[in-house]
Image 1 (cartoon, rainbow, N blue to C red):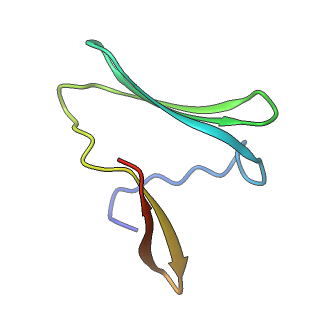
Image 2 (cartoon, one colour):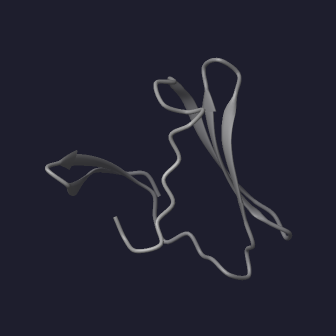
Length: 72
């Protein structure tokens, strides 16, 4: 993990993901991970400070990642 990373497990660990939604409007960028129990993990970002460079599915082995699929 990079310095400054935030890790969230409380409230999401063990849940099944139904879908992931990326939203973009003039006021904020949203990343929402929706679970099958009708809850979600929702992140709001200021669009003036970030730009989505890509979205990937990663596989992890022994602390190293590899791209399994490029989504965006």
